[in-house]
Amino acid sequence: MQIWVGLGNPGAQYAMHRHNVGFMAVDAIAEIHNFEPPKKAFHGWAQQGRIGSTRILLLKPATFMNDSGRAVRAAMDFFKREPGDVVAFHDELDLAPFKVKVKTGGGTAGHNGLRSLDAHIGSDFRRVRIGIGHPGHKDRVTGHVLGNYAKAETDDLSDMLAAIAAEADWLAKGDDARFMNEVALRLQD
Image 1 (spheres, one colour):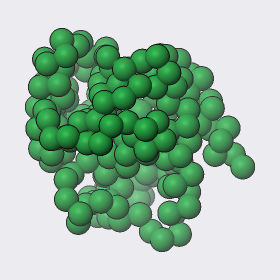
Image 2 (cartoon, helix red, strand yellow):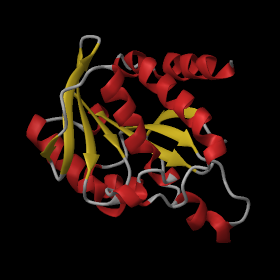
Image 3 (cartoon, helix red, strand yellow):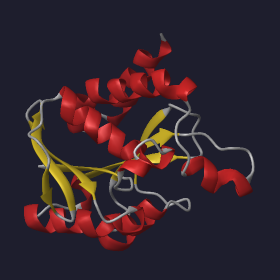
Image 4 (cartoon, one colour):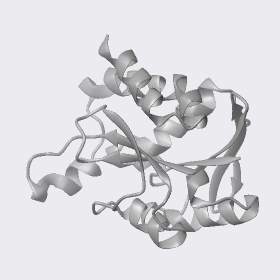
């Protein structure tokens, strides 16, 4: 069992925020791979399913971004999983919009969701970093991160989420390089 957590804030008013792209990614995976309907569990919404032969728990914490780690810790304790079994999908300022990179471990780069995960489970989890781009000046970061995707970006956003979901099998198998490559190839067209 792997635990794939989408980082975001609960509530309709946050649904299209760049900060919620982690929620969007796990929703796309659940839809493409026919996961069971979400149930309230682990301080959030959880869905179980399979990608290939791998059992996956998709988790969207309802704790707000700053306390996401509490939900992940609860799921890890229940399923007796280690940080290496966790994959976090999150927005990344330091990546160009709609670029997708995976890494294991690392710092939090000021991301409150990652900071909470780090505090509750340590830093040795995998991260699917979803680029939202930097607005150019640090004074504009909060508005950018907590702003909605623009109408002009919705096609690119949909394509990227579809690519992540379609290539999730590579992520489940632990082949992060192949996952990144296949997502990038899908987005070249």
